[in-house]
Length: 250
View (cartoon, one colour):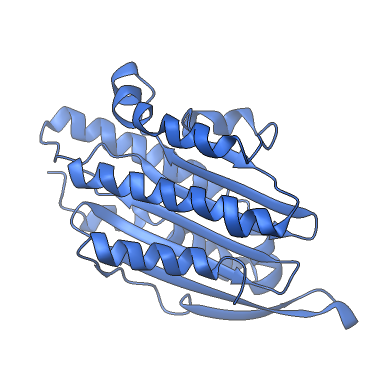
């Protein structure tokens, strides 16, 4: 079993237990893709698999799982709320490269005002502090990215794989359960002005993530530019493509 398979298994089992899930359509050619990384004797087969679900309050729950031997393991797991809820996004980026592990977990906020922080950041700060004791801060990250993260952003670069399998996994479980608590309590927004503000905030986030996707280079080397851009815009961050079909906002 690969490093992040238990994370994915846990996420899917938990979602199935707590939500009424239905499949989210994955465009043809993206459910499973094989490639090769490295040259000569260092060649490693790489497999990318995609998963998609949705529920009443969550527009898209999706995962990209990259398995490329010991030197390349990635799980990108993101939840996008429906456009008539003010819920944050759930973001889990779990990356293992030859140089070590890069872990980012957060409930990425739509807004940064005091009321929003009180509602969605304050309840999870104890979880953040609990795990921060074992997972030290991973260092600077781009200034332009900072508006898209909350004060409970867990960003760490553990050296030992065992830390990922234990401490990071525990943090992932706690963050996901806390997020689903928020989903359970979330109430639909009906005010048209507020709905427009939510839509703009979602678009800003998705545009940033699609433009700056750190996996773009890796996917391009593996599968080519055309496949990669279609994967990013047609599945991973597909809001702009889906907007005409979404009837939540009238």
